[in-house]
Image 1 (cartoon, rainbow, N blue to C red):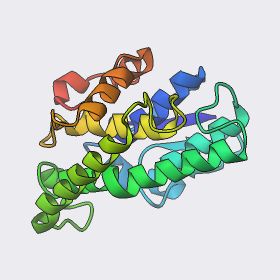
Image 2: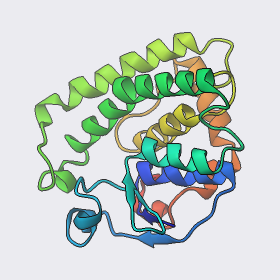
Image 3: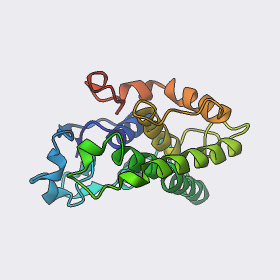
Length: 216
């Protein structure tokens, strides 16, 4: 089993998840800035072209960060980052869905259509006119989450779970590329510092991130 890996917040998400669970495996690194993930032979493995992907020993390829993390949790159930029973897993999936649909997807699209336009305009349909509104929606939903985080250390069940890792990796990337964290969001800022202080947050950074001036 190996992780087809690259720079970027989504590959970092999986690396951080693996680190928290004590999982190690070989990496097959692609150059995402050169669009290696949008060309053959990678597209034969993952026709969606997204990064990262998990290739099993039998050749099966699992893409999409949530699916990868779910699989890793199934085969390495402790420590539980999704849940130990049906109710915990359902709550984690509920919050991951909310975080992705309301916040991270808007942040990523806002970046691709603005600061990242030069990188993405030949790779996907980009809508520069939508960038500012997408960023604003993400900020509004972060403020909504900030209100719900009062008295809580983490998003789900007051312990680190997959939604925390997904949101942290997104926000840590975004804050240096045009979408800083609003200092008025006291609970979100405290949560961010809490996650950022974990050893996995630093060890999951891709080598060379400082030269790129983007944390991924």
